[in-house]
Length: 193
Image (cartoon, rainbow, N blue to C red):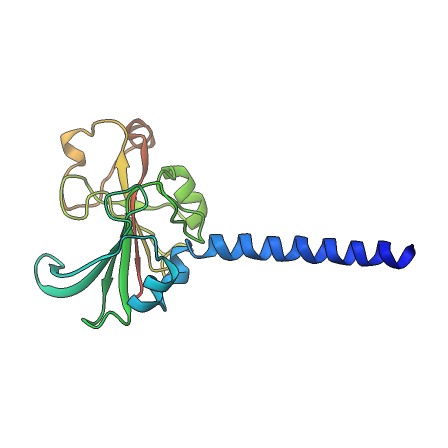
């Protein structure tokens, strides 16, 4: 009887561990930092249900031609990938702006609030004005996330005053920043660093 009990306990523990492992592996495929070494073939293999679209377009204000891949186009899980090479073997960067399945190992996600960014960075962030190509871009100011390759863009929940628009670092009082109700609206991970 004792042997049967021990075998039962061992089988139960083994099942629990394999269940935890498969859950962790299943979730890790949606951690954006884990994707840096993937090729286009890897993506097709790992995300067969993603309705993948591919093409070539001009980037960086029309100065560089890059191949791109879009996973889950037109859904809340849409992820846009650009490549270092036209053969799609090395990822240049990826970006998303919906609160779907993608997560960052930093704990910063779409909807993360301004104060939480400061906390995770360990230093007060700065951000650029709104209404242009890099609207709301965050500057980590030498904090913990400076060399992470993670670029985030803030979106105001409330309409900004005119002085908060344009290609410049925003200078605002804590009260003005609180009134903007800033949250992460887009994330880019750059693998070219």
